[in-house]
Image 1 (cartoon, rainbow, N blue to C red):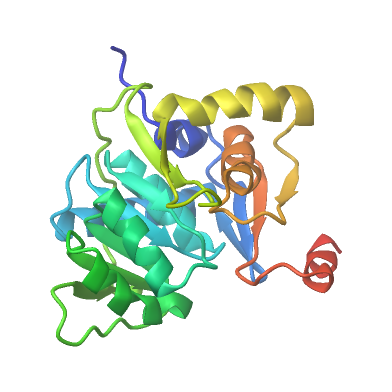
Image 2: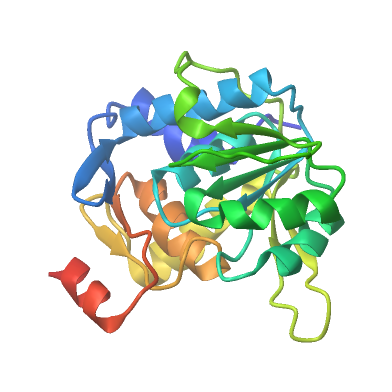
Length: 254
């Protein structure tokens, strides 16, 4: 089959086609261009290699809506790993069985969720590494090696894994209203499909649009609104790592 990788479709082609200086992300008043985002995606890939993670490994993510989410989600895909965004509203005891069910080899968390790692470590024995974005991770008497995202500094371009449109790209877990949440597997081709049907044909997305989603990135709808749809057309996404309230959303709209 023809090689295809969702991360390269969403990111690399903007660099290849001269859109590297367009603003991809606005977060806390800072702008991040597509070229800068690519550097952080490669940084995540180089971190993945340093940690000894391999294509097919699962990476659980408990990450706020911030640039680090994009870096690890696309970086894992570009290296052939499978990122699994999980709800930032879950507690440690709720996360542990999901991470265990996924057989995740690594967990990436925003610093807010460091307290969950002890529970995850004891309940998901396959996890070997934990990476914290925006803070330190210190796990006492744990088999999990802890790392700080900011200490990974290699932004050299990393290779693209030999994936196809039918290769597993990411998992999303159901809400668990009928019991244990279930992992729903998505292919690399699925992201482009949603962008070219719903986003392009219903929302009429364009490269000068700015996207702001109340639904967070770990939701399927939020993932489209804040990542797939803007990156598909080289537009700008506005990310906010706070929980949404009427006041914060109105502030961001203004």
